[in-house]
Length: 222
Image (cartoon, rainbow, N blue to C red; front, side, top):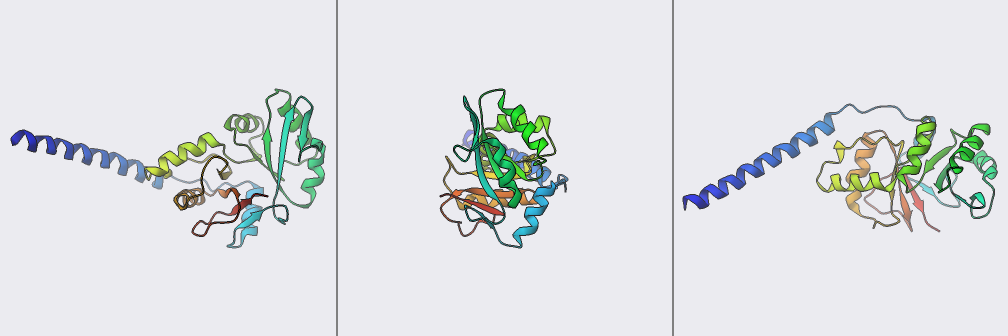
């Protein structure tokens, strides 16, 4: 009997210790000072939300989605248009630019066009690939960026433990990529944490917004 009681006491103290570690991490994350910095583009978009979520689709008046890919033919956007068309697309409204490339020539060409046409404050650079975003940010840290899927996976893991506040979101825009993830109300705590860290929050692509979630914008699929 004494050995059984000793075993349960041992388990109890382990659980108490684990709870103490969890609570300490959670408290540390929530008490950590949050930067108030936001890029001018994020500030502009936040000003347009006015307590309502923006809808990013083909009829959006606030932000347009553009996909850009670099392959053997060079840069192409919206399927078959040249990269230089970004200039015209950015005249009417800012762009959520999803980029994809494999060639080392791609980034210098993109950077040159954006700088020559002064489009840096009109584009949110986004990708599912964290490495591509890191490459861009290392050379142009003042541009506006979203996070990739690797960072998102880490946030999901911490969120499942109630420790989402432990992770500092370095991206300007917290994007919940739903290409390989099912939309869920469990994202509510992630959205609130990203807002607490002064990030612009986008979820998508979705067929329609989900009640119970309050991002700043929804990316609506065609």
